[in-house]
Length: 330
Image 1 (cartoon, rainbow, N blue to C red):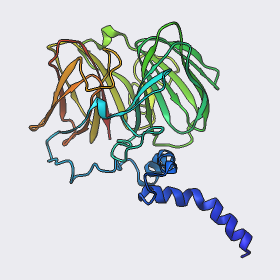
Image 2 (image 1 turned 90 degrees about the horizontal axis):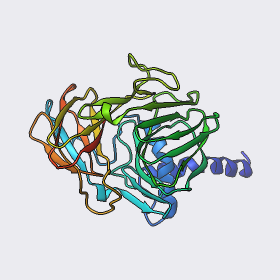
Image 3 (image 1 turned 180 degrees about the horizontal axis):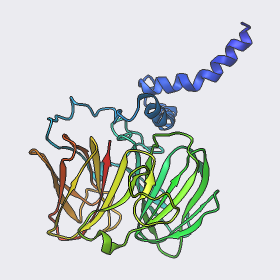
Image 4 (image 1 turned 135 degrees about the vertical axis):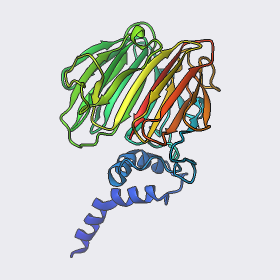
């Protein structure tokens, strides 16, 4: 083989070499290249090793579980990735953009939970995605959505939009109106690649969510899940991910049976932007066994279910209504 051909082959393989070096931590952290490659390769790790890869340091050695007990690993609000860009104030539960933490890369099919606040007349300009399924949970304000499939929409509190990027879409998300928009941007990895791009919207009122669980996202193949652009019930997602939401009044308690091997809980930061230690609405979570944890606004926790069907208990022990999201993951 000619030298020129050999060189060209190695150049073509360079991204793979870098990906493997990044995965096995052979690139020093001081290199900016490392963070960029790790972001790109979260997808690679998921595709190669499957959804059983949780996050670099989560294993049976670091989380002591028994057959029947439920265990929690706290994700405090002020330990999340955080950036204040002026027009955008954002928190990252998992590695995202320039925030990279090998301990918090993804959890099952759940890849991103960003809690975003976008200033008026600003937002995310037109950009493209492939494969990921991206849903936005509106907390406050108005969000303007436009995409390459021709969808244009103004989303408000209680709305949930889901974009299944599949083979590729372009979209923009901008603050609409004179007030800041606060929403959660959530990404999941579908089990099936190269899906046809689709867009869905659902609406769930505060009355529906008051002191009860509402299923807002569910696997597309689950009974009762509709594939229509607008419909009642949960938005369809092509992974083993179910998302529940509630507005839990002070003094109230709810239980949620979890059917997957793991889960994640997040308390929405509804009292306002706070990059410091969490405060505001407070819940206590517990389950079968002796583990329990207290969470405030912005806090989250990884859940190791133990036995299938174990019930997560969520009790509001503060003096404010808590907006709580619970992910049921396989």
